[in-house]
Length: 192
Image (cartoon, rainbow, N blue to C red):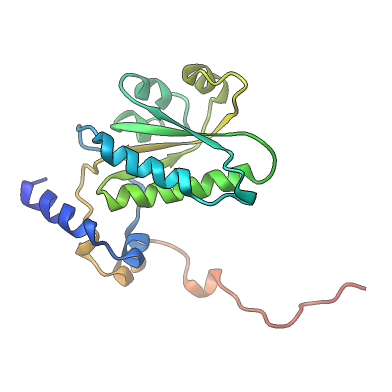
């Protein structure tokens, strides 16, 4: 990626339109071999920290995974290649009662958007070997990893400004709007 593209992306992302950010967000699985600056990682984690949760339970801890541990953690997720080339990752550890998996998903999606706002790509990864991952991260009985979010600068430049939000959505390979949305205004049936 040329310097001018990186600079243009940095300028654009600073003022990114929220609708465009949501429409253009894609999982990134191939990363440039460069670190994420501490201040950028802090912004991503802070957004996860302030994400809403059921009854404000905040059932999470974010474990930042760096260095050689990234490769070891990669062996614990379903698609190791999604993590192995990343600059870093965040294990979202949850515990407690209630919809903790749902809350973890909210935090992960928020961190993905915060990362994208900073020009950082991300990919949520399901955990295949929870026991080994817990040992690697020193969790003990502290909770379980809901997901591992890999992070890094995209290898293939993905500038949201390349397309409009509508164009990003048209290219998303998703079901049609009418297949997933239906409206109701009357009860389908009543219980006796």
